[in-house]
Length: 54
Image (cartoon, rainbow, N blue to C red):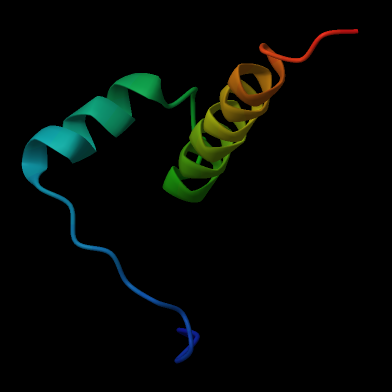
């Protein structure tokens, strides 16, 4: 049963193809996108702290 509160996202064919290239075996698109967000956030934190002096 589809969750009615779940937002939907429309992607063009090229973006879906790029996501397919990143998927490992039967990994879901949700897993791929979550991993990409985690990488983005980690890089953002690294850039934010790169100017800090210890």
